Length: 150
Image 1 (cartoon, one colour):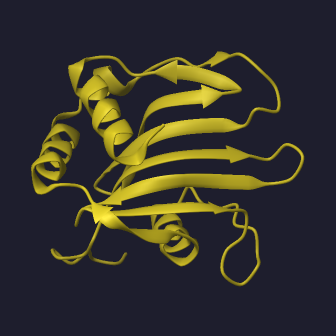
Image 2 (cartoon, one colour):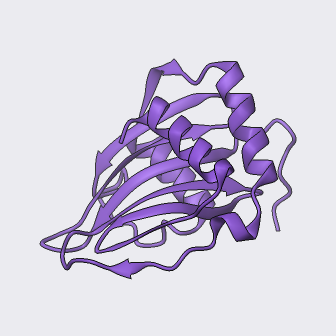
């Protein structure tokens, strides 16, 4: 197991959409622990191979940095500190939700945060919909939309 350095930039928030219907499409945006913002709109990694193992946080980070564009704007320090603080306080009760099937072939959109490199899905949309509840989840979704859109 690889040990993480204290100064290693971590993935904090991802707002993305993935669809396997009628081909493969994966686009979204992400906030990293240094405040950097990346956006991507692609279906392949840099050598042209479609990636299906994006659930692994290290693969996802590499995919975003290799296929995405680092935006010039950054998350302001005050908001970044707030995002980190709220993520550290998230409880299982706030983030648990049941998904309801609503459609076919729409794909899946999600807003997720990462705590110790573990994905915590806050909201999903598309074929299945659902959302965590509570003020921490609402605040994170609001901050995400402020900086990443959606």
